[in-house]
Length: 300
Image 1 (cartoon, rainbow, N blue to C red):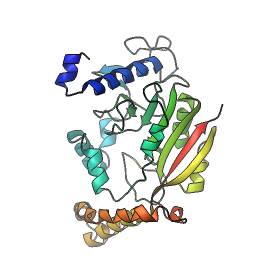
Image 2: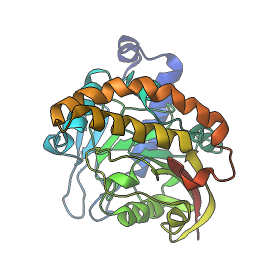
Image 3: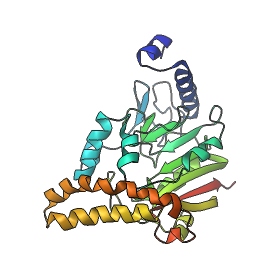
């Protein structure tokens, strides 16, 4: 994109430079998601013929069908809000959500030289946490660089220095495949950081399949050295979310429509999550933590 186009899009010089550097690194790391062969300039594999598409600055190699993203009633609403208010959606979720997450993303990113190393956010959604970060998701949101199935990343073996997976593994039927793919694209010694829920109600995005205890999560990363498993969201967050759902169910008197209408009203209780500023440090916080964050290093 030219400097004039960058100016029209509202990008500052620094942001435009960061984006140019990010895309240069992405282009250098691309490979066929099917056979790992080389891609030509049109994103077609010279070996097997599989191909992707360019939509502006976004590269597409599959991803979710629109019908999948809108199959669950609540997720249908979330998808509409994400697309219409994509830039403010992460801030709105942070304010309205019953979950208070520990600040684990920024320290992880600071441990890399993002100007030089390639680090990916796998399942980034509408959120770009750093302009140098590669955003990859199954949904074609505005901030996503690569739209693809996270089990078949269009990246070469060992091309990443780091990877993040924030609230993704509970939404897939085959977390082992996703973790194996992270292992493949990480360079030896590369690190992954993942947040997964423990005590959280069902929430489809577009699906929801599993939860993990602290010790159970540590067993999910073969081929990695587990560096730490910590509370990523505390006990109050777990309590508040369950209480919100319980109140909406109790006061809806068996009506699904009334239940859906009452859930947003229960968000008035979400500020109680601030109690986790203290409780997250309790030595027994992991017993009813809302979720855990794991950091692991690729062996070999």
